[in-house]
Amino acid sequence: MPIAFKEWAVTARALSEGEQLVTLRKGGIREESKHFVLEHERFFLYPTFDHQRNDLVRSSHHPELRRALEEGVWPDEEPPPRALLQDGGIAQPDRVRIRAWAEVADHFETDDPRIVDSLSPYHVWTPDYARKRLAWKRRHALHVLLLRVHRIPRPVTVRVRDEYHGCRSWVEIDRDLPFEGTPVMADEEFDRASASIRSICGQGEPVPA
Image (cartoon, rainbow, N blue to C red; front, side, top):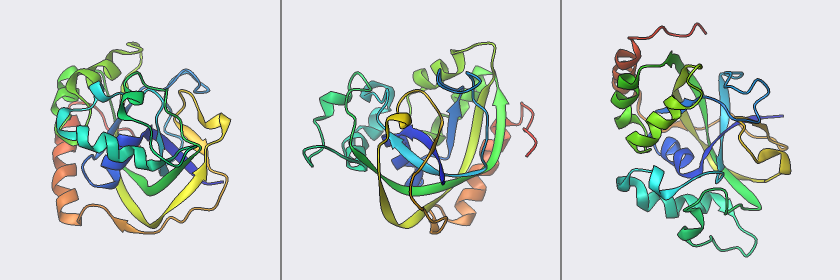
């Protein structure tokens, strides 16, 4: 079955619009090894509302929080009020819309807060939240994934299964999904940005493919 990578709905939307190029991951409590493992080099972006909070997204992207609700199909066919997302994990849709897939263009590990701070222009989270991702599970390095994202020709709606919930990175989607579509960022623009990200992360060692 197709593999999808869970990200907050607002993050998945930012990635699918070319407004975010990296994701930062340590791994959740429901991961098999309790920390993140890059098991797949190509995957769909699954929008989740688990733990998504307004105050952990930069104010410049707060308007996107409401739009991110559109990634879910709710029981009453109307998105819930934004207030439901304040505490995270409250608003859960019956189905979600998958709009994009990603391939890993590069993969780094770091425990350097200066690197995390320097990556701020390439994601929509607050700098404080990015540092919290670094600080969690201090014995484990933070994974930095540089993603090349493609928007599929038309969104695909999938039902939310019980096993999709919780702190896990990977889920198996129970319907066919196409690895088709157009890159969300032009090649030259992506090459410039990825060169900058690689330079920032160059203080660490690239993880072999």
